[in-house]
Amino acid sequence: MNDETLILYYYNDGLSARQRQEVAHVLASDTIVADRYMALCQELSDLVADDAAVPTADMVQRWHDGLDRAIGLHAQARPTPAVHSWSFLLGAGVTAALAIGIGIGILVSRDEQPPIPLNQDLVTDNGVTNSTGRSSAFIRGLQVHLRESERGIGALPGSTDADRERLILNIIEQNRLFERAAEQNDSANLARVLRAFELVLVQLAAADVSPEDAEALRTKLLFELNVVLTKIARDTSDEPQSI
Amino acid sequence: MVAVMTGTAPPSRAEFHEAIANRSTRWYAACLKITRNQELAEDAVQEALLSAWNNRHQFQRNSRLETWIHRIAVNAALQLLRSSRPNVFEPLESDVPDRAATPERVQDDYELGNQLADAFSVLSEIERVCFVLKHLEQWRLREIAEELDVKIDTVKQALFRGVKKLRVKMKSLQGETA
Image (cartoon, rainbow over all chains, first blue to last red; front, side):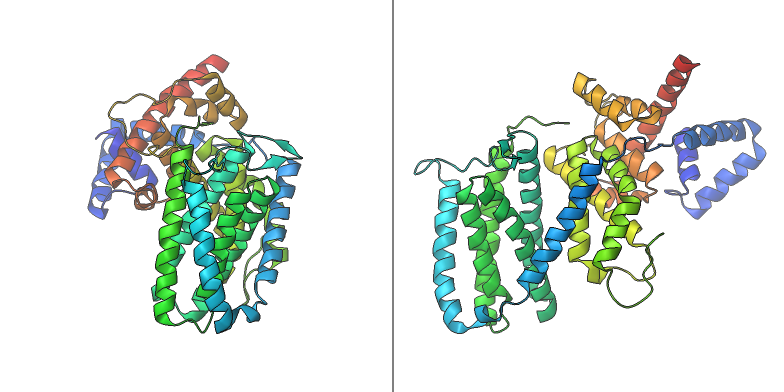
């Protein structure tokens, strides 16, 4: 009997009931295998982590603060009844289309304007730009946010109205966090793209949006999110990794 | 005190803060074992908290809030690791580590802070992650395969190789300290 089978037996995973019975039978009848198994158990049980690495007090405080900020934004995002009027939708639709078009155009085009420095200078720490650590964390977080938004928006057709509103409000909350971070770090173009996303998201969250308009907005958002994600992935693919 | 939900309401802000105070060390440690990078581990915990808060209505009652967030944090750490190194979970053909023991890596291992972490230096990324998820986080093999988007046999082989290497390495380390 090989070690691989004994390892699976130890973890009680990856073996059928019959295979487990066979192992048990061998362990009961073959002292050599039984000794090997006991040694394996002892060595595996010694492979424990004592979690010596603990987060700093500052780190823990940042988690508390981050949670509070998110909760604050959530509270702000709820009362937005005025944006549900048709007149706003018409105006905002044009504005959003233009803003996204302009924003994405600026983000993607290297020829017409300097590109947004997605892989540097996006986040500052106490006013001092840190172009490798915090900004790469910002980009990673932004990518996660955009991918989760893409996934959530992609799944909207099967959602109830309440779920749709809740999901979109959550995306708006996260979007505002990144928009604010971008603004605070002189990435006005990126902030503008994120604001443009929010405008479309607000339309999509409206209770009175028609199914046809909702589908058109959803398709557009998915396309634009994909464009931005592709752009970020391309810009950051050559960055040195910290691992 | 462990926050256990017994009512119908989603977990409150206070319960989230209590969970951070009580268990964030464990979340961070788990994320650090997966990412081996302090910034990524911190980000993973932060993302997990925000995600948990945003989805607090989906929280299963009568279970521990801390455990729920722990799982989300581990998932976030895996996602961040995958984002930072897109092919990180591709299985290796050979039975050798996929990274050299660079000074940075040695430092990372040191910061994990124990002998097991030292031993991790001999593992490839997929071997370490599979071992951490199976041995320390007690995930099912099927869950690991689904999360890493690899075949279950790939997980098994990575686990077998990881355990084999760790057994040898731990004996070596224990010999050095004896």
